Length: 287
Image 1 (cartoon, helix red, strand yellow):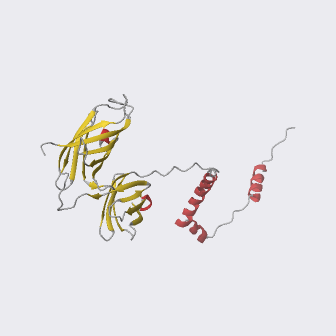
Image 2: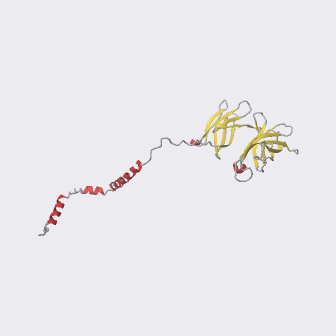
Image 3: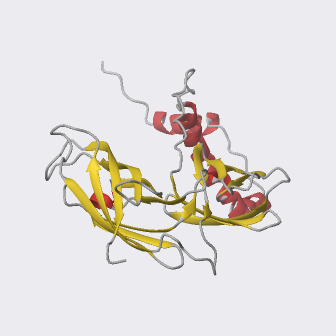
């Protein structure tokens, strides 16, 4: 005889489920109102975010035991230095670093020395000056590790410039061979009545140059033109050196220059070169 389902069984099961279901405690109305407070809701939003950030922090790799070596500090090139020293040792100067000019002042000690720094903040460079007190007026020193020597102007206002006039200058490379232009360059040099000098011309490969500087007195008490033209070959090459005025057999002045052409992909001498240049100047006969 098949078993018949008790019609009261479903009701008894529902009663047992309700009887053993854990009761939820009723929260006080004030607590339920606190749950809706904006600050409490904000904190509940932050907690899941903090849980996501913490695992990400743990995944950050530990620092390397042997960090890569630091890049060597790049020296800032010095392009121009101008300085004026008073009779009491105070000086005003300007220096060009990476194309930016910085002005600075100071005072020389009783021995003619100065030590300081030039430039903004941590980008400053060390400067040392040493003025010779033997009457020659020679100023030497170093800027950012680069040594220099500066000379006093040969003439002051009111003095007669003995070298005034117009000169023709020949320029001959001292290096022989096909890697360097072997022709002769030329230039015209004019010394004014105030001691200002202008030299313009062309080198053996046809490259033009122009310099303008005052006459100075070198350590041998001779008038001299010191210059450095960095405008050659799109400002990547240079012509620099000195021309000294003295009594010579076949010329009125001579000098030793340095001619530098960088490597390039067009034109002659693409490998570039660096050579000395012998300069000889003669006074124009019409003078």
